[in-house]
Every structure is written in C-alpha cells, then in structure tokens.
Amino acid sequence: MVMAASETKFHVLAVDDTLIDRKLIEKLLKTSSYQVTAVDSGTKALEFLGLNNNDHQDVKVNLIITDYCMPGMTGYDLLRKIKESSSFKDIPVVIMSSDNIPSRINRCLEGGAEEFFLKPVQLSDVNKLRPHLMKRTQTNVNKRKAMDEIVSPDRTRARYNELEVN
Amino acid sequence: MERNPIRRQLAIMRQSLFDQGHVDEQFVQLEELQDDANPNFVEEVVTLYYRDSARIILNIEQALERKPFDFRKLDAYMHQFKGSSSSIGAKKVKAESTLFRECCKSGNGEGCMRSFQQLKKEYATLRKKFGAYFQLARQAGPVETASRPK
Image 1 (cartoon, rainbow over the protein chains, first blue to last red):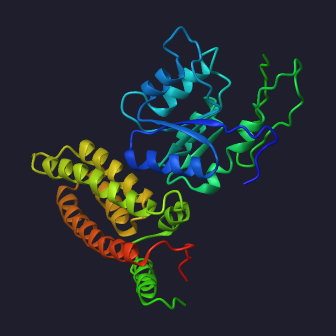
Image 2 (cartoon, each protein chain N blue to C red):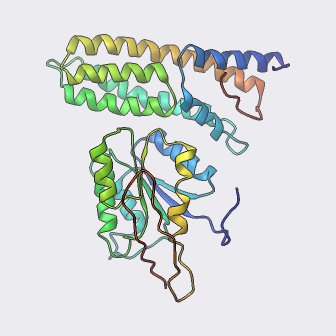
Image 3 (cartoon, helix red, strand yellow):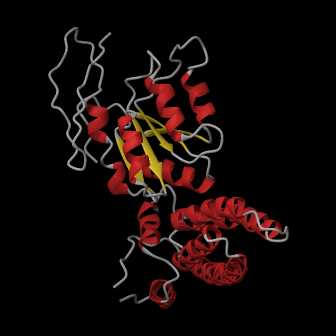
C-alpha cells in the first residue's frame, strides 16, 4: 500500500465491547497499515486518551472508531464527550453499528461523527477512513493549509475544517 | 483446479459451506484478512466466536427457564449473539437469530423456544463443519490466495 509522504503510521483507537468485533476491527486496521489500540469500553477509551487527567492528551490518536451499542457509555456518549473536549474535539470519530436505523445514523452524524459504518465492517469501509485522517495531519508549518472540503456523497452536510497547528 | 488431493478436498468443503448457505460473503472477508503474519486468522476468529458465544447461549437458555419470559433481556442477548454470528459470516445462524428476535418483539414465547432449538442445531452443525474444515486446512498447509465462491 502506498503511504502518504510523511510515512507515519496513523494511530487508531478502536472501541468495541464484543471480543470478536474487536479482533476483527484490529485486523482490518492493521491490514490497512494503521497502528491500533483496541479497548472494550468508552470509559477505557477516555482513560487511554488521558481525558480524565486534566484534559491532557497523553497519547497521539488520529482517529477513534467506536461501536454504538455498548453497555454503560454508548458510542454516541463517547462521541459527545470527545467533541465537547477542547483537547480532543478535532479527533475524527467514526461509529459502527449492526443496526441500520436512520435516526441513529443521523443523530451520530449530527453529533459530529465523520462516518457511520454498518457492521460487519469490511476493508472497503476502512479505506474510507484515510481522507478523514489526511485532512487533519498536523504540520510544523505555522500557517493554515488550504484543504478541500470533504463532502460525502451519502450526506448533504459539509464539514469545515479548522486545523490547529502547533 | 487443485492438483493436491487435500487442497482439492478442502476447496470442495469450502464451496459446500457456501452452497449449503452456512456462510456468506463475510466469511470471504475473513479469508481476505488472513495473511503470512496471521496464517490461521479465520480459524482463530471462528474459535473465538464459539468460545464467546457459548456464554450467550447459556444466558439465553437460563433466561428461557424463567417464566414469564423477559423478552427485552432475551432480545438483548440475541442482539449480541446475532452480531457475533454476522461478524464471522454464519449465515443460517444469523437468520435464525433474526427470527428469534422477531418472536421476542411480538412476545411469542413458543416461537422463541422453537427458534432457539433450531438455532442451536444450526450452530452445532456449523461447528462440526468448521471443525472438519480447519482440521483439513491445517493438514493442507498455507494457501496463497482466497478463492471466491463461484
């Protein structure tokens, strides 16, 4: 697989309470050359990010992919927590669900999810992740890069991108 | 066409899994994820499935012993089970899970029990078939590419 110019592996945090689905998504992501951390709950995801430590990002995560139906904190709850956090709101979040419920899908997209994948997730779905990551690549250059809006054909909503550069 | 007799038998077994409707396209997806780094990936996932889903089957069995049926709980268990079955491409098992859930939604206790019996049958049949298939696969050794069902 041809990598982007930077050749860095993007780090994806996968969240799913089901063991099999965790194994699957991990393999799908690794096959697509991502570095993967898989956890079994939203709470563990937040802990991993360091959200509980004064909102300071302990590890660099480029994308979060989470199951919707999880006990305790749902994928939607996790999405909202991420989007409401000043440190983490720019991390793209993708939601997976075995249920094809349009109102659920819309709610997630309105809530800030980049994509909504129906399970079982396939390689073709994982291939859709890359554009969401590329547009958020942080550079050392001290100016904003003009990036193309990414408009998904399935949705009418365009997302504008605000890059934070260090 | 496979020259090696073991490989040939393996291909026939594999084809019959599809032809008899035991597995669907998702199984092919699993095969496509199998590589040199994970040469037994499919078997690992299927083994994990049977281990993990045994727990859910037990939960459902126990729930069906409690009258009146807690249809919400039964449906929740089956939702989990269906998800896992779907993830490994277990077509018949998944279809039976759907029927069970429909019975839960309509409060059809008899239907649930019938459906569950059928589901356990399919589940056991598939386990046997997978067992034979993977045993042969291990004998055959690593295969270069996954072939699509015709």
